[in-house]
Length: 192
Ligand SMILES: [Zn+2]
Image 1 (cartoon, rainbow, N blue to C red):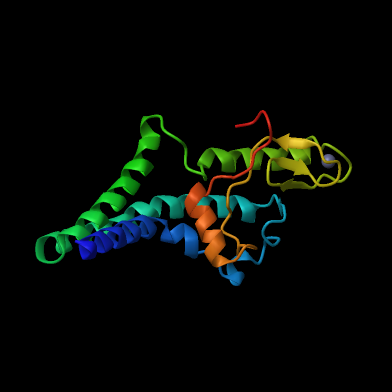
Image 2 (image 1 turned 120 degrees about the horizontal axis):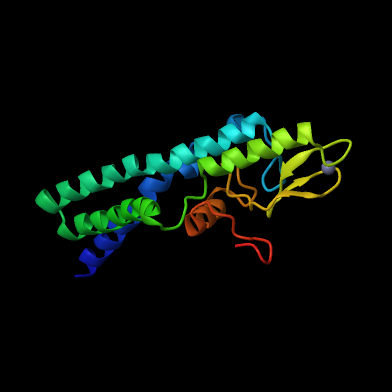
């Protein structure tokens, strides 16, 4: 009985972590973050940042593909191996897929969207055409996009995790990303 429970929990854990592996791992190496300041400092707006946001979005959706692995393994396990391991794998990876798909029927948005990339682009365009001060330097701070020179708020968009090497280390950083699903943990009062 205890063995079954442990296998079930193990299955749940593998099924939970697999769809999130792309977001947790792919861009964390130093070489991928050459163009960015270190976490958790603000990031200057640039085409590199917009591209990173789009990459994070891709990795998020890639998670559905990664969830198919534990689903296949869970099926194998249900048929030929341990039913409790297989059930754990199915339950949590199936849940991950459902929670990603619910965004299409009005659920929460992912932490990284095309819309956000467009908003960054609009801020960059505005800072050239209609600058807020003499030396506009838009950067994405934790709670909003602000100008580093004059500190004016250019867009009230809190910053999600952007795939940089985490200052809180891989383990703690990963736990925070898993808990928040990449969403910003803090936001300005009055913002949601
Ligand atoms: Zn400014």
